[in-house]
Image (cartoon, rainbow, N blue to C red; front, side):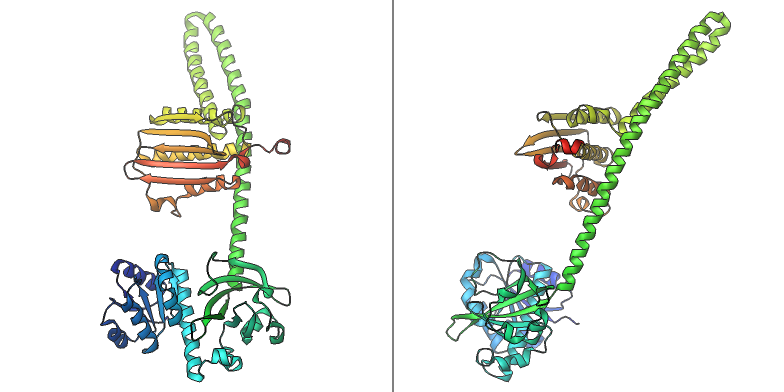
Length: 491
């Protein structure tokens, strides 16, 4: 369906341009951007938009509200006002009397689109009502619902106590009740899970949009967006509400399915990670114990051969030289075995815990890269869950790998501490600094892997960077989630 044309009136050019971009991003043609002034009304007449959006500071500006009144009454065009919270209370009575749409700043694409469509729909309804019969909404429910029964949204009228006085066919179809079962009952009688999103501390007679869950008569649950507007009598006294309901059940089911799929993928990722760590631990043990022992035995045999060759005199010298070269090769192989074993699973992590393992990691990193690495351990002996210790250690490994590959740093600081019931790990460098768009980029698989590693323990990971000042990675894990679970965990 083609989007309606919108004309924007604003006294703040920067804010208005941002609004223009947002509207165009979601498909609304913005046909003009007009300054608040005497010529605004004539420009609106010439451009003939479907809706006028007022984006400016209106408190104390009679000209602005007077222009909105003339647009509504003379041009019969819907008006949506974007207003700061600080201004809302001052202009609220006027907005209520005029019947403008209203949306509090700051706005995003979703709520501005909802507000626009709601304002347009309400304007169509009000225009039909005015054309067919004066004050039809309050004086004749039957006549009103002849107009609204054919629309795709449910429409409900309530009195000031929330009792349903009228409902169209679409609303009855949504909740599965007959009209006589609905009239005279509070709207809350048909809610399922209740409010999904609720604005707290707001007066009941203000305009707002909320999400609701409903329980149908047949027991099924449906979800709607309810856009509610207060009804006032000719003297401006609050009388009740007219509400428009849009069915979002299918959308919500898709969201739930997506969330379920995400949880399944996370569970699978955690399971695979656990298997990988277990397999690494097993392989590291076998390499260290079996291959290491075999190489040690080989070195002992070479030493025995060397002692025997020494008795052969001059002819044994060549044999001794060869045995010495072989012994050197065995020593290097043993070092390689130890390095591979440590990379697969550091023995320190299992034997001494997270702190000593991070100290070893920092020392190994400094030896390999020549980047100065300082470690501060400001915590007592940690009795962490092995999986949690492994996750934090692997995050430290990944962070130092990123420093070596990308940061162009000369120094790294690692700080491990307990603060306010949390285990904090901070790794900062003095390199070029990570860019904001790189932190959440889809290609930053290493960073995504860090977040997923710490998620099962309720942990949070934050990465900040400053150009040419370095990058800081902070991991915070609640100790109540990260500590060992006792005997059950060890069984």
